[in-house]
View 1 (cartoon, one colour):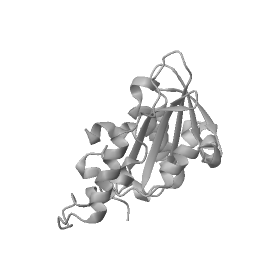
View 2: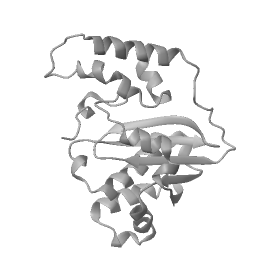
View 3: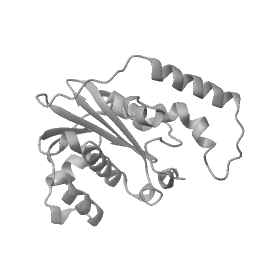
View 4: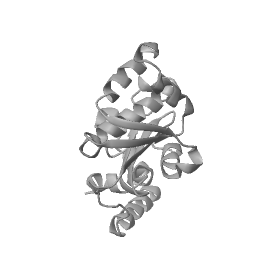
Length: 195
């Protein structure tokens, strides 16, 4: 149940971090007070009223994305209300990417993750990385190879990119800056954090 509800609760992975740490190969299974407190926090959050809005096909779709050194975050919104959250830990190879590549990847991740909402309709993508706006407006041939690959995949979507200061992307920026040891939304092989 927790895994299913993770997409509806922002930053649930932070609450689960002490428990998820026990699932790693190199960590001995010792249930601590910290794990017990984490379990109680998760139970409490699961019983609170939902904070998400229902998706409405007639309303404008806004995708807010951000990245940091260890993960990607995407929030699908309508009329300022979150519809769904999608955090993802970066794979070890992605940790070495430049920041602009990570920001572009966060956009692609968000669009693909919410494909049932984003494909075939106009999507306003908001991000706080100003250089991304410049690179997206250039011809594909002038972008670095890795960005070309991402930009080709983005061609599938009808997007309108807009730079927005981080203070105006409070929810996404906060999720991006939060420390995530692991996330329940990932496959086991994706649980490694960038070192």
